[in-house]
Picture 1 (cartoon, rainbow, N blue to C red):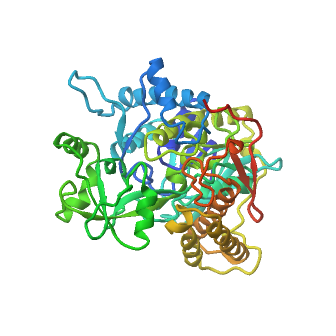
Picture 2: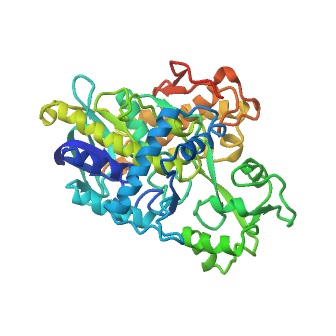
Picture 3: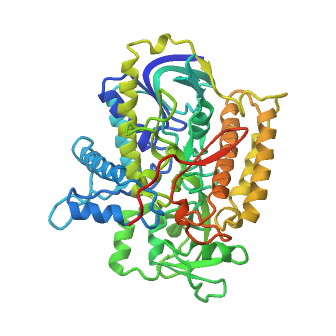
Length: 524
């Protein structure tokens, strides 16, 4: 057992976790960051390029930016939070240029274009900055459960150091969960570490979730690769297997058309509406998008190629841990959430998409969570390491009955209910209800018996987190009896003005869902 003490523990090493660690350290906190993979290379951002919701501080431009997706998100976003994110993102992107010396491209006038980031270079520089801030980094050290003191306040976390093959514990004044969303091991690029662990930890500590119905994001990908960069498909035409145009299919709108067609036949694609200038810009912006094509001798601008849809759940959805304060605090003292682990409803309502808002949210919420956690830890007056603590982990760690292994069978059972398009994307009450029944049975079986030794505990906890995530998703999806944002009910296709509210979800053995207290502003 490795035992450590810190003011702030950050769980997760994507952009949100890195920003949280840096800002907590800058606030004077002693920080430990524990990553499931290797800080700087693991997660969805590190493996790809991403746009960023970066808007100059000009009133008309900011207003247009905030209004641009309000309708798509079902008018569930909060203008105050949106404005804060735009301000913080502007500041953080400028920091990347000035402190990290990020090599932004320049326009014809020599001015830097700060609307996007290349993930590998971005996260490489973030790792350097984290280390220079004095943060102790635990690579390949996934957190497996939270620790709490006698009052119920979060007081650290425990996990497993995979390379050293031994457990670890960090006693901390506050914890930031930046563990990402849940993509259900769908093979989406960079999402193999995104199994919803942080949401499970938060729920075990007594925190709530919000927006879990907005979790049925699917990304277009070539059938022969896991690259899920969807922006370029707005220049594409989709075709039936016989070569005729698939009417209504598209990237921003029309993925349901692709999904319905894929249930019975292949769907082909060609990015045939991009000009030569567009094509050159695309290769510069997203070089890794083209690698699988180049390796197979396919010209995506001229040749037809098969596509599929990969589930990205709450990685590209908006559901996550509910926040209760401007500093990204949760309802549990000492616990903070950032990035995809936290709900993004506040900034984009019930619809987000890839990059852009999510990237802006990661750096903004990471900043606020790190600063908030540092303040909370400082308020303990040095008592953080002296508190008696107890572990909170249950399912997949401390079963209710005789322990058995077998995480793989539970993962397969969950995937069978959440990956198929006709259950999760093409939602209908007649399919959601029996799927939730299966998931409830899966949870009871897992909760009663699953436990694995050594590094297997990480996989067992991921199986438990995926099962819990799926149950929260479908419970909220059944509770929202309308179509809003990315949550589209085929049996209830209209938006209901009476349901213009956010849904809060919680519980483990028994799931509950209720409307969030307080009225939302009326959509204009």
